[in-house]
Length: 115
Image 1 (spheres, rainbow, N blue to C red):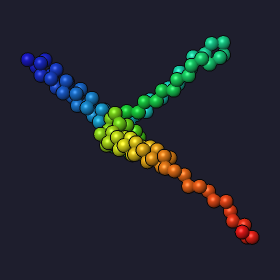
Image 2 (cartoon, rainbow, N blue to C red):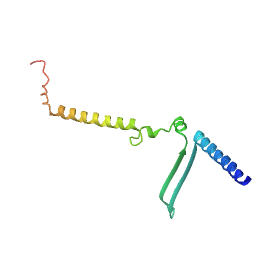
Image 3 (cartoon, rainbow, N blue to C red):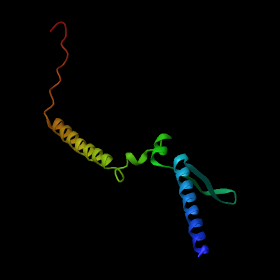
Image 4 (cartoon, rainbow, N blue to C red):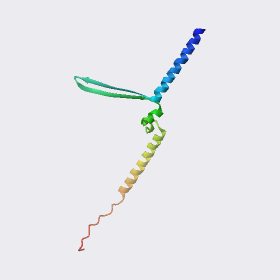
């Protein structure tokens, strides 16, 4: 029976440590960077730059990463702005078309002093 209690204590300590580690990683942030280059006969065929940032949303904002706020697929606010922008563009196109359809005023030739 003592063996069963030992397992439970060990498991609880392990879980707490994992949670602490995850909290620290999200609080501080982790950057993983790597470059992959594929070459043949000293000719670069492919170059891939990998950058991975793991952080909490608050930490990401703090370091200036907030691209998800302007992505319409991820943000309802950005989606509304995109829809509003599309409506305004349609209105502008309509007004420009109506303006182009108006008769153009004739240009007057400049008057001469003797006329």
